[in-house]
Amino acid sequence: MGVYFTKLISFYSVLQIIKQISFYTVLTEFMKIGERIRNLRQMSNLTQEELAERAGLTKGFISQIERDLTSISLDSLIKILER
Image (cartoon, rainbow, N blue to C red; front, side, top):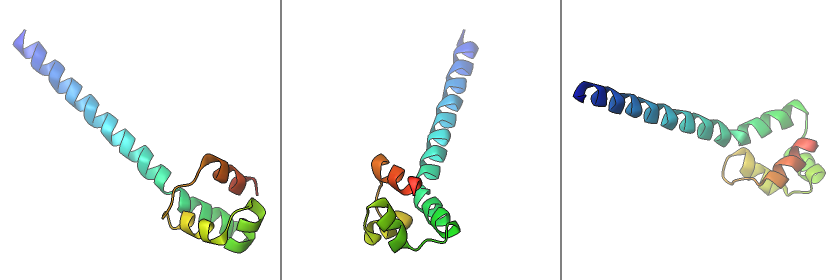
């Protein structure tokens, strides 16, 4: 019984580590959204001012998003991606 319990605890520990790594990976990828927005804007040959005007946002806000200095709401993200 002791060996089985030890293996169960070890398996549980491995699962916890995998969950933490997965969460970290998702969080890290999500945090790179500013870089992705910048790349999409540049591929569309838009300046920050042009994107801001089209999305109804300010150039300063676009700049902060691209540098990952602020978080972005889902509504703002949709406005940017629709343009």
